[in-house]
Image (tube, rainbow, N blue to C red):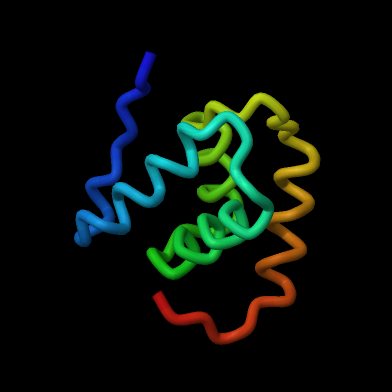
Length: 84
């Protein structure tokens, strides 16, 4: 069943669709997950908000909150300029 995700904070339809696709995929690639984190950060979400958003909206078969938190922290602590 397709979960309804609140993406009102995102203006572009193509970005909303990309985020929904990543979150609803049972096993998105590592790169897609990193893009998701980077884009959410670009949208002004902080680490806690990003982790909560992913936890509440993902449908990943291999989701692990501790690993996701570690990856989000690692990505944001080492972020470089990224364009969307």
